[in-house]
Amino acid sequence: MKTLPLLLALASLSLFAAAAPKAAPAEKVAVKAKAKAKAPNPAMTAIEDVAGLPRVLLIGDSISIGYTLPVRQELAGKANVHRIPTNGGPTKNGTANLAKWLGTGKWDVIHFNFGLHDLRHMEDGKRQVEPADYEANLRSLVADLKKTGAKLIFGTTTPVPEGKLTPPRTFGDVATYNDIALKVMKENGVAIDDLNAAVTPDIAKLQNPNDVHYNPEGYAVLGKAVVKSISAAIGK
Image 1 (tube, one colour):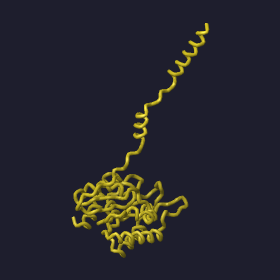
Image 2 (cartoon, rainbow, N blue to C red):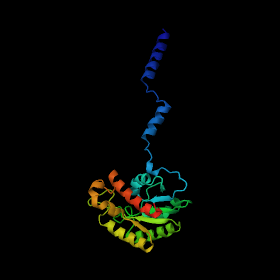
Image 3 (cartoon, helix red, strand yellow):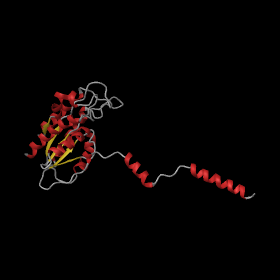
Image 4 (cartoon, one colour):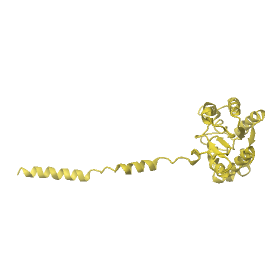
């Protein structure tokens, strides 16, 4: 009779083991975790220079991220097109990080833009960088960029649609900030790539609804404008 309790205990352990969830193999857990990880944006991929070609650096926010690949494709075999490995954000971010973005290599052309993040409204109602500070920051950035000896091109800030946006921006601010930028660039002999004018005629077709960003066709249009300005700078 002593064997009966033992048999009952063994049976209970067997049932518990069968009901317990099985641990997933380590390799399956790793695969799932990897799948959940966001794939890196190919625009951020570092490129290897082709010897003998001019080196170009793109500096800007998410709009510039969107046109980076079209520009690289159009200038393949004509220029080594690099970009900063992040969203450039407002001018105050540029002044804080420019030295790191420039690195130690020689640049032949630098195409840059700041504006959309500067004119963004913050929770206190003020813009992230008010117009007077925007001008001061641009002057500082241009002074440091000129030290590189590269040909400089400023891309004007693209349109902000009317209506409620998240994060909030005001339609009329773009003209105000572009006027400031154009004054600074003219005083410093910096070439202008009028990206705003490039997309404005077909803005309803090129820009995402209620958004400052663009669809693929829109980024292609912006890319062609950038390519044209860079090609003029490198003489190709």
